[in-house]
Each structure stands twice: as C-alpha cells, then as structure tokens.
Image (cartoon, rainbow, N blue to C red):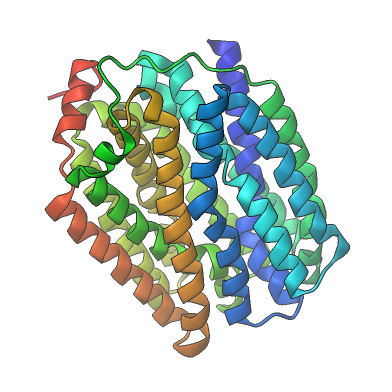
Length: 392
C-alpha cells in the first residue's frame, strides 16, 4: 500500500500544484493583460462553469467503459492541449476558448480520481486525509513559488509555468493503477432515488452556498492583498499559510471523523467561513488578522471538503460512487464556483472589495443555517460506526 499511496499522493501533489499556480495568479495575469474586473470575473466563471456539466459526462464515460483510470488519462491530456492555447497570447475570446476547453477536460480529473482513491482505500477510508494532504503540499509549493515568479508584469509568465506542471500531472495519471470495484454491501440504488433524499439535497445546497462564498477569494484575493499595500510575495505566503492550515486538518481528519458527527463538523466549517470572510472584508489592513483568516482555511475548505467527500462516498453507494463525486464537483465547484466568480466581478466593480467579501460572508452564513436546520447525517454516521470509523 505504501507504493500505491505514493502514486496517489503524487497525483494530488501535482494536480493541486496546477491549482496553486492558476487560482491565485490567474486574476493578476488577466489584470496585467488589461482586462476590467467584470470581464475577469466572467472569464473565470467560464472556467468554473465547465464543472457544472463536464464531471457528469466524464463520469458517464467512465461508467460505460468500465475503466475509470482511462478517463483520467484522457482528460489529463485534453486539459493540457486546451490550456496550451494561452501560449499564443490570444485576446479575450481566445482566452475564453482556452479556459472552456481546459475547464471541460480538467473537470473530469478530480471526481474520478477521488473515486479511484477511495476505492483503493476500501475499508481504510479514514486514511483519505493522509493521501489528500499531498495536494495541499503541492498547493503550498506552487503558491510560494508564484509569489516570486509572478510579481508585477511577470504574471504574464503564467501560461508557460502552468503547462510545465500540467505535463507532470499527465505523467502521474499514467502511472496510477486501475482501482478495484467498490466494495459496499447492499444495493447501490438508482441515482435519481439517491438525489431525492432530503439530506443529499441539503448537502448539495450547502455546497453551492459555501463554494459561491469562495468566489471573491479565488478570483481577487491576490489583487485585494496587493491593493491593501502588500507585495505579491506576501500574497503568496498568505495563500500558502491557508494551505498549510489545511494540511494540519487532513492530518487530524481521521481522528475527527471517528469522534464527531459529520453534521457537527460541517457546521463548524461553515461558521469558520462566516468569520473568515467578515474579517477579511473589514480588516484587510491588519496583517495579523489576514493571517488568522487564512488559518481558518483549515475548516472553511479542509474540514468542509473532507466531510463532503465522505458523505458523498457513503450516500452514493457501489456503482454510483464515481457519479456521486462528479455531482459534488458539478454542483459545488461548478454551480457554486461559477456563481461566486460571476457575482464577485460585478460586486468588486460596483460596491468595492470590502463589501464583496461581506457578501461572501452572508452566503456562508446562509449555508451554515441550512446545515443546522436541514443537513441530517445520522445515516452516514451510523455507517461509519458500523465500519469502526466513528466514536460515540
């Protein structure tokens, strides 16, 4: 299992190194290209909007072919080719095309890889956090490096750097073995029947609100930090600090998943996000506050994601696992992410950066209220007890 864990962790490392290069510095790249905030938000929303439909299509292809790893390899190559269009330094329409093609292929990677990883882990699902933390390490390396590489007009180097890292992702996908079939007992049921369950609907609604609240952060946080008087290197350090806090969470995730209910963990994640965006919007001039806000990333993203992935894995059983993870990506990162990037561009230009982060805090607050009132994880918690993963 050690060699396999190394391969799985390696993929996560380089996959999230791409994210750590692209997400913090795509906004500055587009800004240096001379685009206005509204157009920047619209272009990023194209990238995220691909996650609405693409994961489901890739999942259906994986189900039909019966080889999930083949889909992962195909998607990795296609994403590289799509992003390569940016090497020609196109205008807004060309950038939109590149982001659409890249986003469509890239969206097929992580959901199927998550399902592959969880299938490989089998009864050791609680070890997911230890595998996934390598992605956070990759993100840290990329954001720290980006703070040096993309200062000022050097942000225009972004396409070349992303292409280099994506080439390693392709290699990592090709050395990952196919996973065994899911080992859940009992019937998996139908996709529609699973989606009709109130807790599942509540989970996806919470995901939309949570990921929409991250819109200003993913699109404009680096520019926000620069406008507050800090350097691009400081922005990179802040991004990295958030990912480091996320790593700590993944190290302790098995213990948390054993000891506490998934519902209570989700509520903590949402509450931390409310505090984070509120303080980010109101006190950006205080570096200590920004560091504290980035520390809350351990809950707002790390804890939230760990709980959501486990819930999807337990509620979408057997042959539905791949499509369940695809739906989580489509609904949360796709719908939620596209809404977040789209509204943040308009809010940034019309009401200003601080108010935009307060709007984000309001969305997270609505998600917290929904989690408290409607997200019943008792069935998933009982399954964890049956597997010996939850303490009571």
